[in-house]
Image 1: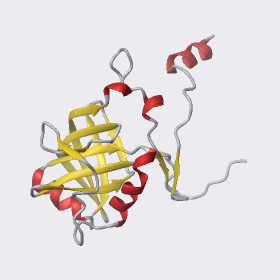
Image 2: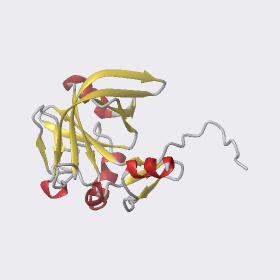
Image 3: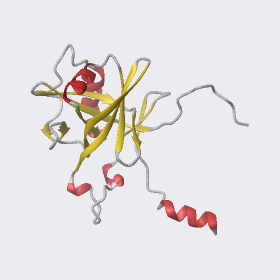
Image 4: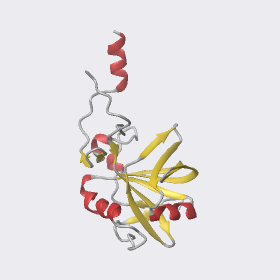
Length: 184
């Protein structure tokens, strides 16, 4: 029997990301697991209102969303535990400027440079609704067809109820195959 566990946030796991924004001439970074896709041309980044990086994002109107890999986790932890208001996080990652000026992490397997199109405010949170200006991927992590190979990228996942990181697993199969099986 299924049990109603109340209004629990249960849409997990989510990808672990590091969001970057420029703070003057230097980047600042923060750990964010609450990112989403709305439509085929927008992403969302949800941050607690008190985060230092929020004002940087509002000033520049640009940010990056960088997928975390397992080797990055020690720096990712610092990005989430240290506030940019008390300590510069500019040297936490090697970075380069995307074409739109947002800082992207050089070692991140996938980085998405964005422009803020809107901000959705809820109690205690600001969710930045962003257009995607560019997606940066190591060529080794692309398929022959030029698509991101997530089996090679192996993004780290975050599970909120226990504050745990998960590894991605194996490919089960193409989505359309399951639809064909269900119709047969």
